[in-house]
Length: 300
Length: 220
Ligand SMILES: Nc1ncnc2c1ncn2[C@@H]1O[C@H](COP(=O)(O)OP(=O)(O)O)[C@@H](O)[C@H]1O
Ligand SMILES: [Mg+2]
Image (cartoon, rainbow over all chains, first blue to last red; front, top):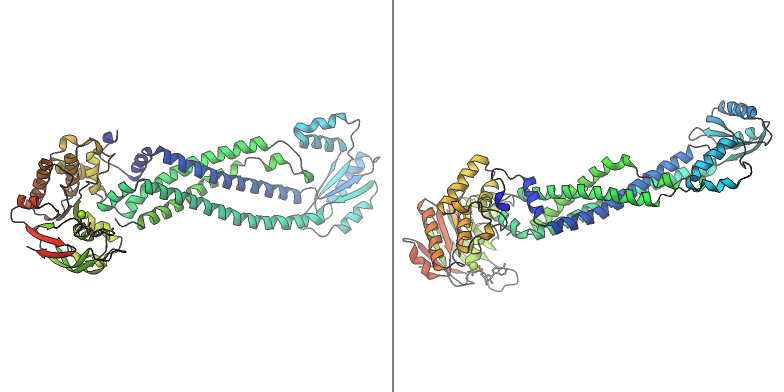
């Protein structure tokens, strides 16, 4: 079989494929260990971005809820919304009738919306949802002013601790970036060690190449190809794995604050291209370092 | 072609040096037998010449290059100017004979048409052209060594180093190998051949013989 190879050209990719065919178990070991590592990285970035997006939705969401008195007319609700929208710190204000609120709640519950079937009447009130401009001033004044208006039963605000949430989100982002970098380094190390195994398996061939005068680059190039192909395969596997796990775990469940697990556990296709690039980059760096180290220790 | 001056080689954890103050001048076109019993330092001597080990003391010049001053990047370039032959052939077992011979040219960047021509010529020289597409590990010992010689000759090196090239072969194949090296010598190559087998010395007329004894060089 090896004897029938076309003789004229044997570039690094051809040599890589040749040496990969000779050691299929090594490919299995490399791809599976890489896939596991990459899956951890992918799941981490995926979840991290989803949580961050959820926090952002929260902090720009309806941060003030103006609850109307039970007998207030819907027209009064619309009027209050117009009034509130005129204030400078308000981004938008919208009247949400209780039927709409119930329908939204039903959607958030997803498959568990059956829970609502037994209700004799809608327990939710009419309300005006007020969204504030980001970083707006303290709410006490605004809240009190809203509360003084006719037809308003109560003003519920979540803003004070939302500030803390935002700060927490920023810290989490920094911690997350550091952890992400560590995971990247982890992938590089896994690749470097896998490559050293590959070098070890092929030490006899490499010795011969070195003896007839192959440069380090000539010996290294097939390994770079090999690792790239392995990283691509492992990245695909990792994404499949994460996609499967997320699909399995993402039962629709609404957490406090309207955080929905199905959105946090959603597979985020936006990160596929950067993830593949990162996997390839980690593979090339790890392979470069691994082959260099393994070969330099030998002189032959 | 090869100049050694006061060369010693100590291996770590060895009390006695493998080579002890060896000086030698091999002019171009010479056929040099390096003899001596097993353990005398013959392999060490050759390994120093192709940059597989560094001397502990002394200077070595090969084809004008001072090996002590070569950077790791320059070692491959030195090796591309040599043809090295080993007792255990050192072929890539899964590649064809053609590819094994081509390797010596590919690492030097020789391309396509030129490469095919030169590989075929080298295979004709050793009488293996009919086995070009055979996988290397399917060959007999004698054929494998001829393939290895073809690889060493393919880029027409001015210096050929052979370490017990017939050590694993029966007398008929050993003779065959010696004939090929003599032919290469006749075409102008300098040859240094290490062997513990005195019977080989008679096969080459006018060859010089240098004897290693426990790391020390004695000329006869
Ligand atoms: N890599 C090595 N490490 C330690 N000692 C070695 C090594 N290679 C050779 N030697 C020692 O150096 C001496 C010369 O060995 P060698 O050059 O192989 O001799 P020869 O080829 O003549 O049989 C021997 O004593 C051998 O044990
Ligand atoms: Mg020896």
